Image (tube, rainbow over all chains, first blue to last red):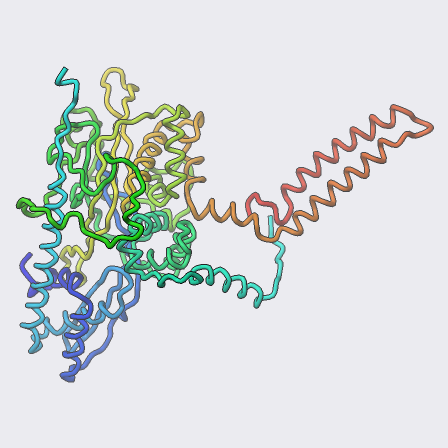
Length: 147
Length: 397
């Protein structure tokens, strides 16, 4: 991962950033008088999760995931965000933040820092979960070996 | 087959609904929050998402709250909500070896690469009521753990790959071509038999937990040839990946919690080159019972026999869906007045004719009775046939 300045990475980091933080940024960006037009209104939609079954390596549809995408145009810069679940406010805020960073808004530095912190927190949680799971790694002994 | 509408006062129906809702709020306890349900009853919301075929933890918590804990009703609510949404896209197909596992055990390989990770489970402890939970404050029992540095989460080697390396599991004939093929989507296309395996897996993945478990159990109890050994059981998070609309690059936009199970089945159809057959299960959420049941059913269906229920794809897939079975079973309590009146009329008519036939006649004793009795039997046969085709009959409505 290159970091939040990279558009693809930013899209991932927006999903782990608290919705309230994104909303604060979006409000601050709009308060500056930026011209906003909504290209795709935030609306819950379905994303079919396809998985490759490991034995025959055959893809199949596991089930659908509820996601909320949104797309905006902010002062001529386009922004996109997609959030897990029914999250209209977070998706719209995320798209505004994405567009603001793409357009070099004065708040860009603060946004990138917040996204980096969100990413670090998320990685920390994952690492801790992994360490907790590894803490339960067991070696099974068969009693037959001791007879 | 058709329906005959029954009407009732709308206000009375609303009163009944209000009484149902009153049962949820009648006690003195605080209203359950969605966070409480999602945090503390995760197995319940997992089951609902799995049976709905829809991953949305917060909405599943809402559905559980609204359904007052009825899992099938809650799954129904999620499927109804789903039917109002547009399809955004399909994810890029994910290999389950990319799962970030919090639990992985292999009952077949003691020294499995990556280790036996027990993870969160009570499998190896006694099932006894813990009365301290009734009135004590919640304490995190892992708070005092001193964790060793485990580094970044790493994918675990799939046990099936180990068997494949030894040639004990047949390699896919043409994996590249298989991966390119668009899988059947049973939410959009009706099932037709013989059914493809991708459709079987999708239908089992959203099957009702009890039905999947019971049918899988039937195979183990001798109503089938399959008694597998589990290669591994995993619980973890699978990446959900889409293509970014601007960059065209892959974005992991979230993870879904899933349970996966793989089994090997010793079948020696190919005497010259004996290999394992297999079964596979994968479902949303933490639900090991269902994933293992699905694995047994997947392996059984591949036997492709009509001898045993679990080996008959049509039987299994016609009965495992919770919405179908719940709808059919529970619709029986709805008004069936016309059906019942029709049956009553026929039975009364048969009884009347039988009574008339039983009355002694003066001119033809004996012989006349036999003729009338035959007629009653014929009428009875007709009436059963007719009632099966009655407008409100349970078959096919």
